[in-house]
Length: 218
Image (cartoon, rainbow, N blue to C red; front, side, top):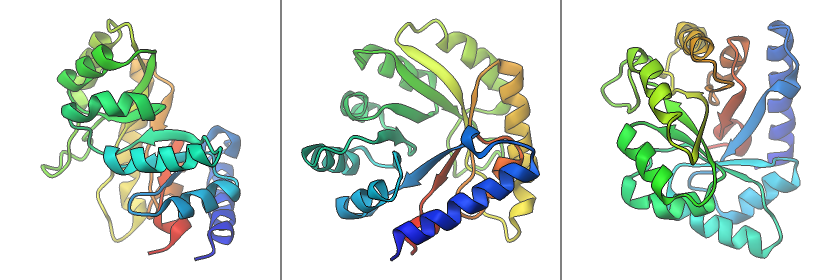
């Protein structure tokens, strides 16, 4: 797989999508999703210019963080998958930001375990899919208010996973709803958009996109 070439193509697509929305591509953080990939693939992505890495599983991430640190590589690590409360102690030591806070109990556990101010995002189940976790849209304002009382968490934004659609344009209402919700809560970031739909997400205001297959193939 030609990671450098794929990465360049993704960056060009990000720039075009940002231009259509009259935005700067500098507003958008590209997170390379490395679930199931080796540390060598992660290192290749970093050497190609990636400095934000997204992982779905704590144990897999812990191995990669250790191996890359031994090589002197320290990207920003994003937890983007479901986080079990029994993995929080490890997670707060290895991740720089948690995208997938999906319950108040998890937030309180993070607040208790972290030794620093931990940036977090709330996962929102905008599409109301039973197979996905996250807060309901109506819950979010009250949850944000509650989490702002936790002194070691910094709520920076909202995250969602859109349904897989045959036409990515069909995801637009999902992304637009999350942007509107973000605006009402006074938060900054929108983590939304993956390999199949990141261009639509950018057009609707994404500040972080989580891309794996379009960079690494598969």
